Length: 278
Image (cartoon, rainbow, N blue to C red; front, side, top):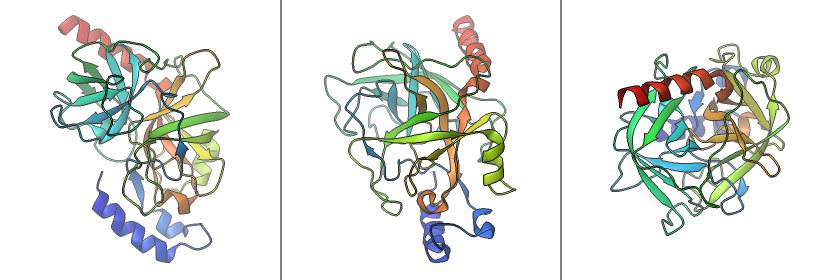
């Protein structure tokens, strides 16, 4: 996540944007990874997303870089672009206030990880990774998994995004507490039509748009969860925050996620290989 280059582009676009919309020429040049924050979200109810984790590159000195989602006691799903060397990364579950690691939180060491083998390292498809924790999570009211969708399931309607957010598009200091945004799924053809012709959008993506202008999902925590919330049941993980057009609050374009239902078989394959090899 290249914050300095993002800031430079944002400064240029702040002058060029008109009426909350970007010109077509400008929009074509700035597909970007999520910057790590939810823009203009609202504070989530404490522990309303017990499946979310904060990821860091260093276990001994945890400094948040991306979000991730617990899918069972041993495994976390996140974005491929969040991962350079997965082994010895840190994952903290049970957080609400980002810096408050206490008796409700559970920190785990990542001892194995796999980035999708077809991910090329840029903005685009196959932006998914799977991480294994060295010690299983203990599930309780503060830490519990999200469920996976069925293979190739297509969703519609209302969804929710969670992450540790920044208050405004041009303020790069993260909020202290977990933020949430309510979004609406945009079907693939409508998403493709709305985005510039050069957008690296593929069928294994899922798109959403916020229900209010200037409330942005595309700057959600990279790697974090887009979920369908169920009454009296676990939330279903349908998307992994991947990329969008910046500055999101001005661009007013759909946000792009890795569609988890396209990778259910891949997740199962990596898990099976791990248990055979290790």
